[in-house]
Length: 87
Image (cartoon, one colour):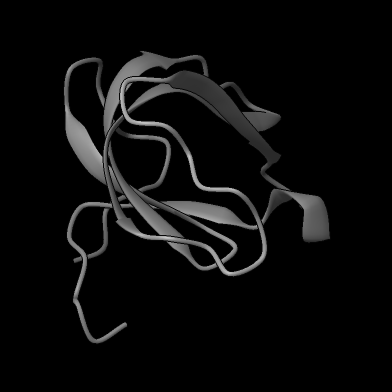
């Protein structure tokens, strides 16, 4: 069963994927609502660096947000419970 992307709780750890980069993160806030999936995250580890953008910094906090409907190209990130190294 796949976990709902807006179901992560404060303190949980997950994998954050965006533009080829994979980071291990801690959930600092879940501010999701009926329109948006929105989190505050802290980078614990950079597992795979992006070839397109500068990598995140370990210990840095940041916010990610995307619309539930019609997300568009600027919001192509995802949270995952597990990460397969072959991805």
